[in-house]
Image (tube, rainbow, N blue to C red):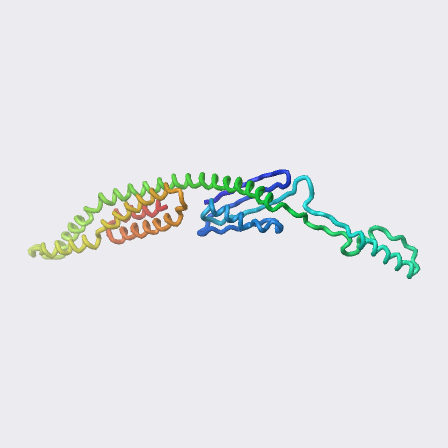
Length: 279
């Protein structure tokens, strides 16, 4: 299921804005994009998400802002600047140049002005990040639960349709053998001389063989069992996607087997309808 959640948290030092996007995926694949200087918190983020979201492709976007002051310190190397100034003065004197040394001449030199990222309170950053992250996770789960409830209602409607078709197929099942026997008798009557008697034992044996080959009792029993399990799984609180995937494959197997074994056009019609409403 898909979901989107955003969490914002601000204290006196930091402001975190975290966005989480989740889409369907076979596994639990979490990708985090965040500032490099707090990348040590990536494992913390993934662990928190895995505790709440067990399956899906999850993309996490972390934005950190500093409150009240810049995250960067600017430092000027005064002794180095003085050394550059003296060197420039000496150079102009030696070359006989009449040129005033300006500030931009010195600033053009390497390493006069340096920028450094300020040290952060790692514990406080973690606390602030988790506050924002938990908000985002909660919002993602809320969205996924709403979508999941709608999917559940849709699946229950479809499973009820399949149950109704199963009942119709069960009612039709006894007549398949009877109609086959009658058609076989009519065909034999057409082909044999009317003065020849039908071998009833041979006819009964052929009908019995057909009845055995076309029996769909086991498939119907398994289908009804699958339906009960399906509804039960839908009420579970854990991740149920893989369980449902397996059951749906079994639905497909039993329905197609019924279609191939029954050898009846009416049952085949409902097999097509069951496949139409398959989850």
